[in-house]
Image: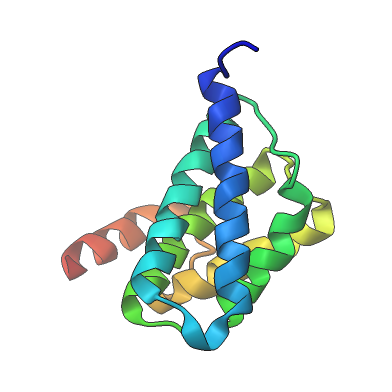
Length: 140
């Protein structure tokens, strides 16, 4: 039995994070916000690696409903930030065609909705991008 490649290990990590996220989503009243934030950051990082290496996890088809459930919960500011990071990655997964067109549209919409909590309308064109960047930088 040979050693797993780093890519296989990353895909296994994604599957593990999906299982952890599913557990947290199903235990709404007992969620540890700090652990959930950590899972959001970790799955985002792992999905980014998979996308960069043209990999596709076997459970990708189940992610849209999980992300939708996660986004519909009430969140602290800290968790909203973690969700925003995750949803930026999810948008990249949509562009990489991990999900159906219908799911991708819904996920884009959710990502924009979460983004609106941070800096207003996230559907910016190139002509408005400099203004938006300047606005965000001024806030920080």
